Length: 216
Image 1 (cartoon, rainbow, N blue to C red):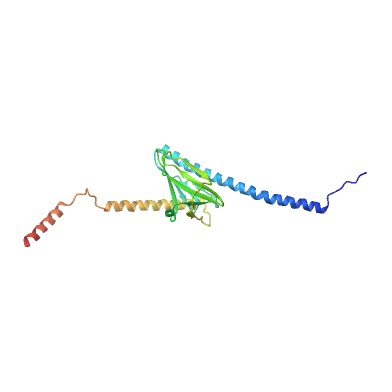
Image 2 (cartoon, rainbow, N blue to C red):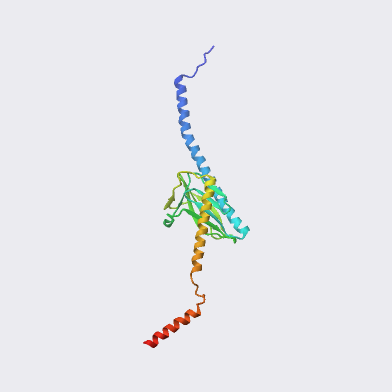
């Protein structure tokens, strides 16, 4: 009877090393693919969030706004619905004048139009550029579109929870309302060109001017 030949210890070690090398190459590729999928999924959800604002503006016959907070990495609408982006994703712009921006407001109008806007998003080596078209108010994004990262908005170290975000939203709205009240109060205090003058004051000024002329 012929004796069966078994694997030697050296052969088993070689096989295990080969398996380890293959796994080391395959796992990072799989992880990168997962990150790409999550990045695209996030951008899709952001586009849907903005499109809902456009639909609401058209159905309610009122302009609708969505505010994007760069540092917090979230956006919210007028109904306080919040969309939170993963911590790894940051926004950027190609405009230098945007370096002091804390938020970006996307505005949609009842006739289906919108304020034109463009904003970039980056995660590791992946880039997506969000577009809002003025005519038709269409919202979409392009992956790996070339856009210069002049200003990149770093995210806050701590991720705020939903309750904290809602408090920040209320503070922001109160601040905006206070600013509007101050502006309206300032306009009320400014005399309009159509305001009527006090006739007594005008007559008094004319009399004074006449007396000064006679003395001379």
